[in-house]
Length: 244
Image 1: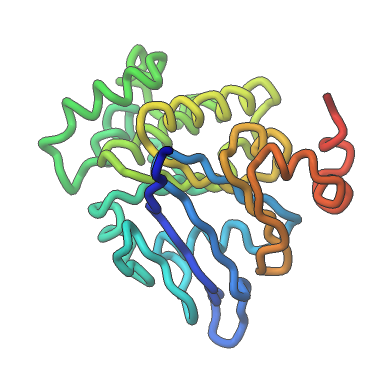
Image 2: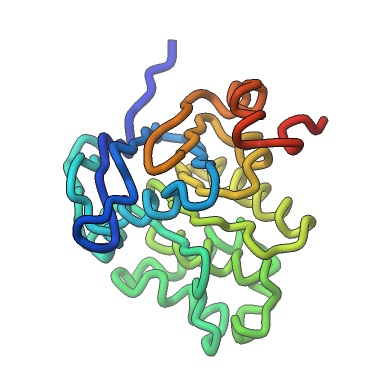
C-alpha cells in the first residue's frame, strides 16, 4: 500500500486584498507529493486569490498554509521561492525585452550556480525554447510565452508549481499544449496546483479537484469524479461537462 506525503496544505483561509473585505472565506486545499491539483469555479469565486495567498501575494487574515508540515502562512514570495514554491502569474509573466535565456537566468537569480543544470532540465521539457534562446520573449506567441514563464518558475527546482490560468487567451490548440506540458512537468517530479477557467480540461488532468464558489470550497473529489458529478456539471461545467 502506497503512503501519500502531504506537500502543501491550506486550511480555513480567510484572505482579501483590502482590510475588511474577505475574498476567501474558510477556503482550503491539499496537494500531496506528485499530484496535480486543480481549482475551478465561476468568475469571482476567489480562485486566483487563493493561489496568490499561497504565494504570499494576498494577506491571509485567518487559517494556515503549511509546506511539508512547516507553517509558511504570509511568508514573502522570495522566501517561498527559496523554499521550493514556484508561481506563474496569469498576466505579465515574462520579461518581454529580455531573451528567453535571460528570462530563465532571472528564474534562478537566488542561486545562479544552478543555471546550467536547470537549463538542461527546462530544455528537456521545452526543447523548442532552446532553439530560440536568444530571441526576445516579447516576440513570442502567447503559448510560447507561457512555456517561458513556466520554465522560469522551474529554474529554482521547486517541489510545487502554482499556475494561475495558464491557458487564458490561448488558441484551443495552444491550450491543449499547455495542459500536456503541465502533465509533463508533473511527470518530471514537480507537484502542480493549477487554477483554470477551462474547467473540464483541467479536471481531466488532475488527481484532485476543488470547486470554489464565493470564496469557499463547494466540492472536492478526484478530477474524474468531479467531471462526472451531475451537480458539478449542472452548476459549474454546463455543456462542457457533457462533451465526450
